Length: 254
Image (cartoon, rainbow, N blue to C red; front, side, top):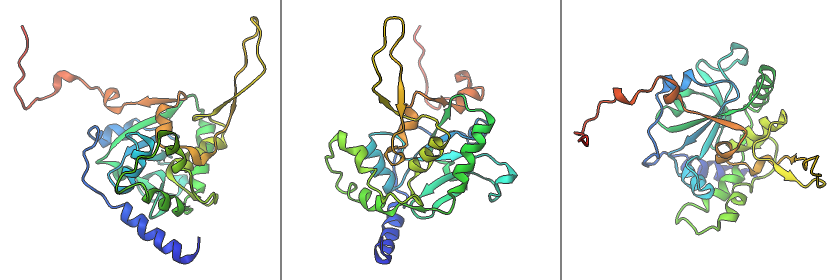
């Protein structure tokens, strides 16, 4: 991408990253509850409130438009005070951010099942090594075409619309960054099932996996993956519906 196209891409990215007034699907989680339930390696899905989020949610037919990887607060990471996530941002590229970045947004924690501490550490190292990489601005050009008016893109083509980046390994979008980190430790997200020779009644047909290209992943894939648990901080923080103070009168059927 030449310098002029890069400048135009930056301008478009800045425009698309401006917040707009939208109604979230659900209220934001209490930040204290969220922080208390995060572990290194967790993927935080975010329902964004920008023009870019609108395009991604439309193309993926999903609530989630952004993903960030929780890397923890270990001092050895050499991150700024309070920073505990790595994300790919359209304007700033791959960077670290704190929990306050998502404080007023609807979020969901997706936790990879069965990672040990060594695997968590390896995953985090890969994500941290990407800090400073650029955002794939070709992806921004592609997404900009699907904003106003919202076009009738066939469902089967929507995932492809999100994978039209440059292919440069030093450029990324949010879900590609995280998918690359998980693939580096051979952890499945939504792998492709590979045909294997038929089994016998005494020996079931084996299942073989093939990695999907990292650029083909979207935030919603971590939500629907069978290899990630969904962690709900409100439920794990002693929620009791009897303690809710309702503003409107409630009539109880007798």
